[in-house]
Image (tube, rainbow, N blue to C red; front, side, top):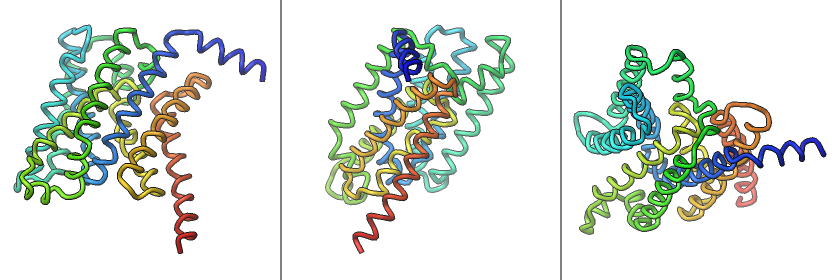
Length: 284
């Protein structure tokens, strides 16, 4: 036990560990807020689609040689989120088809650009890092942490400010439109916030695992709780705890950060599924 305590103390004496924890917990919190809404609106797959768009945008930023790829990734991902929203309302192209088109197209174009214009000799390593997060969360700089804090504050503030409207749009969009409220505007807010969350989560779990970070905490909370507010609070707690535990286990055991966090989310989901069985039996 003494060796483990000494090892923990040693690791937490490094700034990069604290940077990873701060960014990881903020990303997990932001992801859980919109996860419930996306799941209830049956639009949870948008996270996967936008993450692939972000992958393509990062490939473009790499070709341009930008030191901070956020200047390219954020605008492209936000614009794609808006286009997905508009296209999903098109009678000729369903929402899931639009997501599939943009998702596969962006992923293919991004990988092709990385091969045609390689920014380093280790293309496969760059692709693996972008897709699965790898150890990029452990190489954050102070500027990256500050940017993440600012974007997280924007996301959380927007969610709290429009909470009641998001709640209404989530459950009965037609009724909201009938009352004169511009539901499209609040759907746009949801899309933009989702895009920002995707960009934030790229460094934590990679583009292929982002959907898990958004969906699993929400689904876990829904197993036990029924009210919208309770589900969001529980989802936020699950997401933050799993992110913290995943980062800690990853640092201590040397496992991939993103995969470890998602594995923790899956384990909690299974636990909540078992808990839901007991609660249903008691209710009966």
